[in-house]
Image 1 (tube, rainbow, N blue to C red):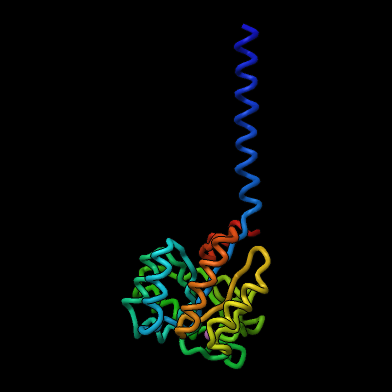
Image 2 (tube, rainbow, N blue to C red):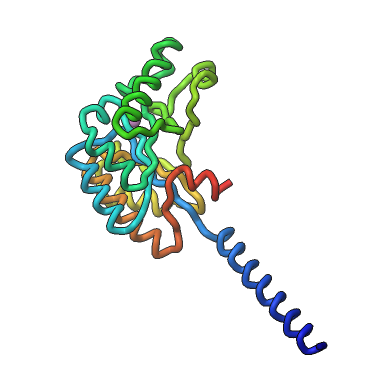
Amino acid sequence: MKKIILIIFILVISLSYKEEKVVNNNINSKYIALTFDDGPNNKTTPRLLDELKKRNIQATFFVLGLQAEKYPEITRRIVNEGHTIGNHTYNHYNLSRLSFLEAQNELQKTSDVIFSITSIYPKYYRPSYGSIKKNQINKINLKLVRWTLDSKDWRYQNTPRIVKKVLNEVDGNEIILMHDIYDTSVDAAIEIIDKLTVQGYKFVTIDKYLQVST
Ligand code: NI
């Protein structure tokens, strides 16, 4: 009888030890939410989607209403392949320079376009230029997502420079700002994924990122 109790005791101890190990692994993981603004673009977005699919990686796309309307197939593909879709305004106007109603309209129109194409209402938005007035935020039923690391891809348009900046600055959990409208950005994103995966980083959608990083 004593023997059985001892065996059960050891079993319980070893099981709880295993569980603790799993929890610790989670804490030690480094998560990256790659975010792509200003698309979709018919020349660059499909290639990015292909490369993400090959690696079974999900990202987040803050689309412009104007572009989503132009490329509904690519917009649908973003959602169908498990990426998170967000709202980046309709015309890429600077919302802080618009009236409250105009700003509201820019965001509402984009959410409606996304819904009409994908049957999904975006939960997140990123204002163009990251710019919005405080009193405009209050009324919008969308969660604001900025970034923690700016790749400056739109400025450099040079793959090695973009990769170097990100690899130099990455430090644990990050939301990385990129744009899926340049070939150099697509190339850089692929290189960043491959290099940081080796370093133990995990690439997730903004939805997942907000769950695991906070
Ligand atoms: Ni933008």
